[in-house]
Image 1 (cartoon, one colour):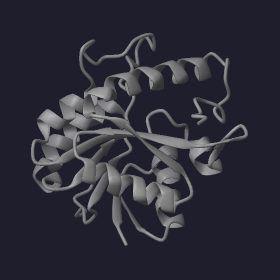
Image 2 (cartoon, helix red, strand yellow):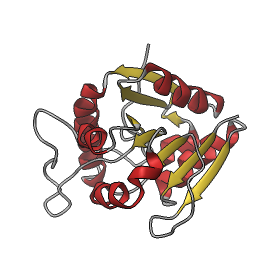
Image 3 (cartoon, helix red, strand yellow):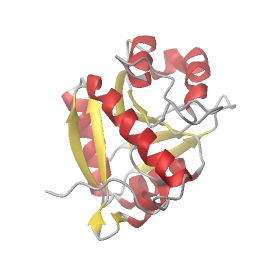
Image 4 (cartoon, rainbow, N blue to C red):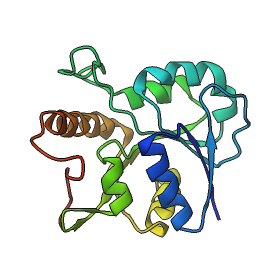
Length: 190
């Protein structure tokens, strides 16, 4: 059994927590503004991307040795028309540099909370794409996701987080423009 700590209890944090619990694993919600201890081997950062720097500053030492999952989509929240990540990198890559003793993964950012909860996108199963440089960390997260009834696919190294952030951005902008619903999105079909 794996313990997953989730910082953030909004729609995404709640949906991810439900998947963790459905798989028989333990979920722990930790508030951003609390001093509650993190006990999970896997820590999901279910917060808006501007909160990452504060979490690193406040909890960086506590995240050492843990699998840290960045689910953020680094949008420019003022214009909603671009990413704030460097063109040749990603916010997940920046997070990995800020947390050198953690095993940072990018996952869940190409999913909406509703598709995680339903475990489907239309008639297709919901799939969580996972990018990271640590194969064992990716396997551990994938095991938790699959146990909860959702598909997981290794999307490659952490360098692929750049593409995942771009897909997440595109999907969000389409939903905001009502070109797709919040129950829709990108599905993988093998």
